[in-house]
Length: 525
Image (cartoon, rainbow, N blue to C red; front, side):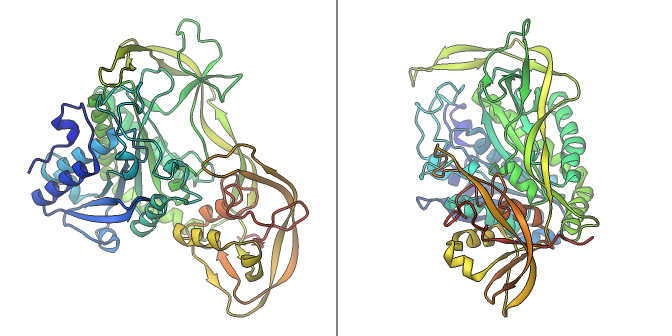
């Protein structure tokens, strides 16, 4: 059977449909005993979401994978089905791991690949989608899923069938390292691929340091030395005076107050979400104006070099993630978590590569394609590439959802989301007196603009301590668990991306009303 992808067969003029992805997967399964193929869910329209499990020896369950005492790496592609190089690159990589030059890697790392996450969007291939992108000329799918949801904004609220399936996969397989493969357009820079680790400051700082210093630096070096690709941390150009307004073209001779600015810190984005699960994670953004073949190749190279680093650092990765889990569940000191954040500037200007584009016609779409220029100029500018908490509060010892509040405030969907995220909960068999902190709302702001079907809410208020009777049937979420950081972000009333923000705790909220989820006292040392 032909193990080439649709992109390879057509000399990178077209991308793979779901049927083409299935054809390649079937060919891989016939070619090697080291792959197991599973479904990790179905899309909103009922399409299968395949998962390839690659290992030597072959494994079929998370328990068997972790019993090998190797890092488990999860590679996800096509979350935005107009950004298709990850889909092609991950299938090519699977072929190399199973039958080619990377086969020895499977004795050191277990690799999970989800090549076609947004399968519904992928089936809507059209030459009028992302017309400025430099190929494939035969068209691409849509950014959104069938419900018009951006799946890379759905990691916290879990509104889509796809996101619920993916988070269940993350909980079941618990990969040590995750990779999310994208394409970026935006500013005209000089990089073939940009990348990012988890950006949310509530991520354990040891994980952030390990991603940036121990992993990304050697990956960055290898991308140029071994493959000739220019890479750097993800960003776009903006003016320092108006940071939220992206600038496409920069004059290298007169850059003015131009800065290089990363994206968002919130865990609605998958990379930031995985960081709150105490795992290592990388965003890959191939440059939209690089030709399609080049984008597939640079993405494949980035994943390959990441796997090499994971294999070299296997023991350190497993030890670090286990240590962070233990410390999160039972900290040696009170754990402070941010509820407000700001982007931070580099201590000094850094060298950023400024590029440009040329316009060429796409004969199929009738639109102009933007093509990466060969001219690249280094320009020193401030980099706004990290975030810091501007206000923090102590992690409580847990949270209580009183049984009466579940019905009164319609909290069943929020409770179900907690289960899907993998947050551990227990139900009280009998009433008990507990010291709690209740958040009394003094201000409620609801966004005027609808975003992803929701109108974001933010609360202000103050906590009041008291001892309350907690009735039987109430739910207790203990902070003595590895996912305490994620639980905090979901449950806290002042969280900028939790249940309040996404209207999952919404019914009955008003000024002078107490937030229906109570905090237990601060965690003891």
